[in-house]
Image (cartoon, rainbow, N blue to C red; front, top):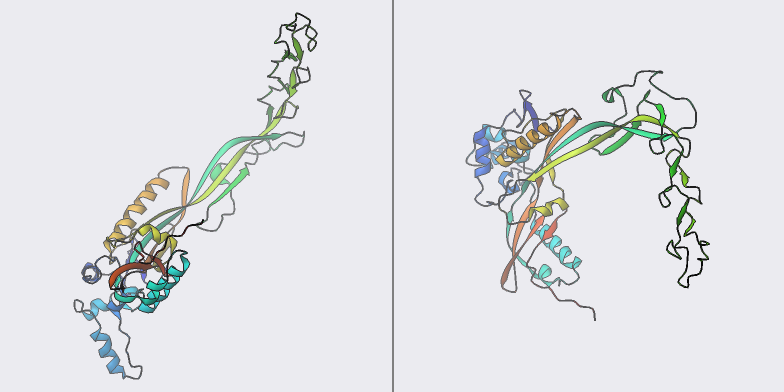
Amino acid sequence: MEKDLLMGDGNCASYGSDGVLSPKIAQGASCNSSLWEGASAPPCEMMDNSPEDEKETVADAENQSISDIPAHMSCEEYEGLPPYLREGNVLFASEQDVKEAFLQYAASKRCYSTAPAKQMKVQNLTPLNIYRYRLETFTEMRDTHMASELYDGGFVDSFAVGIPPLPWDITVDEPPLFTDCEMHIPVPHSYSVEDCPNCKRRGETMCQPCKGTGKKKCSACGGTGSQEDSNICSWCAGSGKNRCFNCRGNGWLKCYRCNGSGVLLFHTELTITWKNNVLEHVADKNSGFPVHHLQEVTGKEIVSDEGSLVFPIVDFPEPLVEDYSRAFIAQHNMQFTSEGLHRVLRQKQTVELVPLTKVDYEWKERVYSFYIFGNENKVYTKDYPAKCCCSIM
């Protein structure tokens, strides 16, 4: 668990160097957003308290730090902020980042001219950083079914040897946490030799094309025994039937399931399924950006809470994150703890701060815009101004 994540009273996750971030501070942090209305996370310049002159005195440094505290907060409230709001580390794209990313984006498109990316004049950078909440519930499910195999006459580990263990009493090595995996295990002492259900111990099954007779209707004469000229059919010698090619006239075939032995070795098969069940949502506030593109990028993990079970996040600066946490945890608890087939082995909830910046720029006396997002500085735009129509003749 990160330093900025503490467990309040053992029941919920809270934030702040001294424990819980008060609702007043959370409200102030989320309401001071006139310049970044569409964002769910604040821009980096909101909390930049680093001194410009490295040689200034300690007193000057303290005065500089105090002067950078937002007007709506007291010193105590500022110190109570979590590090990702108190320090100047909230992600934000610089103008240089923007230009490099936009040029790389234009160059990657076959039909795009790079002129706008090279000649553009940046008019405005609007930070729209978004919180992404993710809940992972790692579960184990156990189920049994009957399985069979060929019996070679060897030793049978039957009920007479020992009592078969119950599904949840069988010990296995678990896979790495939050990794999907499936395992099939024969249950000890569950073996028995039984009649083959396919042939009823006969070792043979009836040939279906000839219905066990060994003969089929002659295809040359249609079963009449004679040709059109009233002569006897030469193919069936007038009988109207030919030997069945499928069973070679025997009428029966060796049973494919028991290979003709008439018996099978049955046992109980245990199937163990480990699955990482994931619920994810982004706290978008009508930024105008198609948020499904965020699946392509990563952000900065600012909260990580892991345990046998996690509890809803409280007192987070963005209320939507609290809503997602509460709803998703309740959904998984209802889905996986109320039935006997599943066991919850581990839960993890994370909050990422995903960089998202809207860029307004001018090119040829017209204003356009695009978005730069993720740690990868990917670009999205729907109105690139210099496209050409390519065709292959």
